[in-house]
Length: 124
Length: 147
Image (cartoon, rainbow over all chains, first blue to last red; front, side):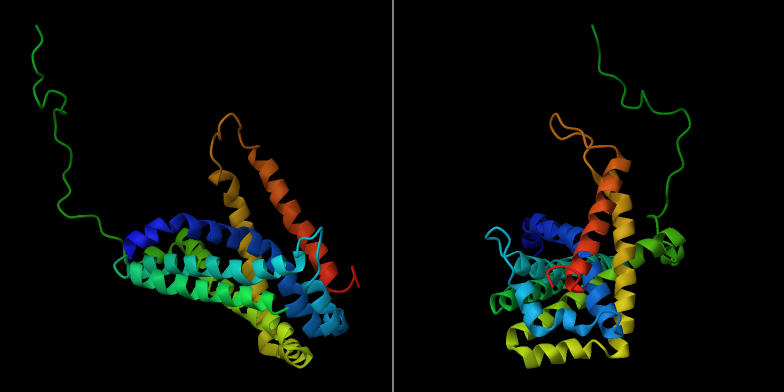
């Protein structure tokens, strides 16, 4: 398992890095509007009523499904940032002996979440 | 004609202090301010993981029809969710500020013939992208654009 983790490390680091960079940039507006301003009534909930939300989510830009791609980035990339940083935290506190098992479990969770994210945008 | 050098020819006249035990990590290693900031940065991983799964839940509900979507969006009005989202937003901003501060230092000194731009230029670009995309996306989500 340790050898496998070393082989896929470039892919994991790519997803982790994009999770911090793109995830952080996109999540700021997502959390601000959907998580805080709409629930508090500062922004009327009509702004993301079902029909409009679906229209935005399925929007295309120059034949590119931009709505689905943005949603996929918002859903999947933070999972990889989360999994990799939790792994790092657990290595700091628990040592590296259990790292292969812990890392495998965390990346499995991130993979399962990413598959669910892909399915979620396909269903739209 | 040369001859092989004596194995200890370059040794110092007085031997250095020899460690008698391997170095130990102090029990309170995590309590220094530098380590606390580093560990807090890592701990935001839990927040990102949960935020990702909550986003999946909302988008999944959107694909399930109006009833499921309205229910999922309405659930966010629960005060626990609001407090959580404020906390998550603070974590995301904290991660962004720390990561963007570190980003110029992580650039390669040279990539072929190209050199990376100076740190302040990279900083300005990152913050411009962050603020610009946040304003644009917020305006779209709040109905100010493409209403």
